[in-house]
Image 1 (cartoon, rainbow, N blue to C red):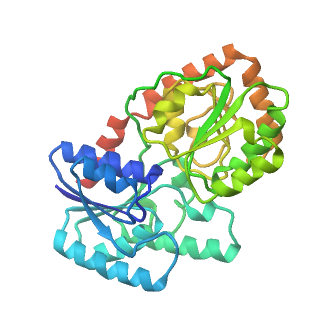
Image 2 (cartoon, rainbow, N blue to C red; image 1 turned 135 degrees about the vertical axis):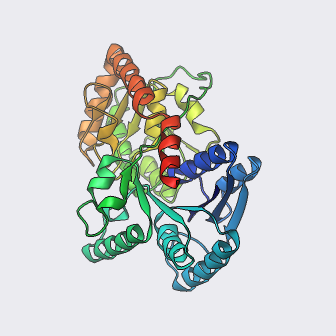
Length: 358
């Protein structure tokens, strides 16, 4: 098949990782693959290194700009008319809406949209959520099938009119990967995340402020994003900067999970995060919030701990509990790895995705 993947931004968050993994795998299977995206980020460099054709949209960006949206749409129409893919697999809200409309206008045989989380679940004004829901509904209507990466993602929209038969749940999946050797034996709590408000890293810092006063430990945050400066100022104002390391973006960040004793994900909103799957594969004990598809991975007390959203006090208590109970950490981490291997394999994700391309 000829497969064209589309995504708004070319940074390397979860959605971009998903596109990269599918594109490289489908090309290895003999399909004709290209990726269309905006920006000039690491996704493009990774794709080009894998000899996957990249088509850039000069004006495509996450922020809203009517002029740039119109330019991007007509540029996309030109690309679709030239490429004529059998499958147009679109990801992220803006690419989903514009790509779905363009694909329908040009009669693309199979338009697949993957939701990596609904923006209406974020903290927004009521009228903004209403507009977003309308746009999401139109995107699903325009697609032939919409992949929901968790049951919760599907549940959020399944009662909307005319879309029930368009929705299919396909979990994100990961393959085995190598871990780097540990470089520091200091007790370490860590996370890997884009530094955005929905990741709840301000809550992690608030809990850490209490924890580090009575424990010899360090906090490592891997990732970049718009909130980095605010988080660094917050840590400085709390007087905890010496115990917090902002490592920024790291190539092959998952290999660094071997340096953590505990993995934290205090998110306000998620779909089905890759980093949580990777932390589980690394046998780390996990503290997370019960948002999106996370409860479909973590069963609290069995293979991790789930805490209420925006509750620094419970996060602090959970950190203390894990710190003081190495046998509990080992038991929960081992059980979580078994869960990941059984239910979230990359091979199963690819097989299920390929089935809906046909």
